[in-house]
View 1: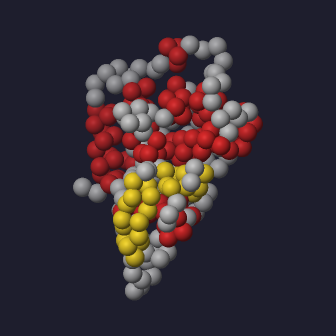
View 2: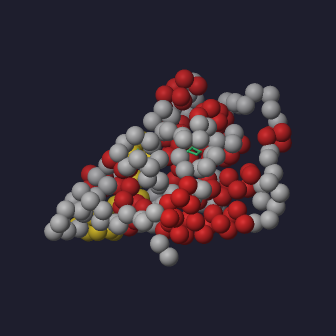
Length: 227
Ligand code: FES
Ligand code: FES
């Protein structure tokens, strides 16, 4: 099964569960990087791993440091990191939206700094530490504090932009653990959200930084059940 049908099957499994709450659904989305947008992708043909390859160009076997592991992979000269991660290493938490450095869905960390992987050539990151959303998982499968905070603040709506938002926020807090709201807003400004959940994500960043955000509302009051 290719990656997109697998995402779709995962979503179908999540949404088909009886008594699933919005919160548990979001947890599934945010932990796996899957999103309901994958449903529309399901109908579209997946781009081939060699998309954009010039005729006659050949891959070269390289070693990449991804999520703390060394990964050996054949990489074409013009291949982007997003393509390598998604279609060769199976790290589909990294989303491809615009594929031209506009939306931020493909954000990963390179040496701890947020980068658009759709606009980064894989050959340029050999020897550097690449972290995808999958790499934020704790040793016991725990969510990263940013992921937990986004869930609390109901950031993910369709979830498509969420992995990129998570990576941008995690990179910000790594560099600046106590940002002002304005600093956080600037740091997140490269990540678009078609669902318009900007304030929710911003609240999540402030919550992860240890600053309570959604003023005066108890968590239970924000729980929405679809049971
Ligand atoms: S997919 Fe990379 S910025 Fe949109
Ligand atoms: S949650 Fe849907 S695009 Fe951001």
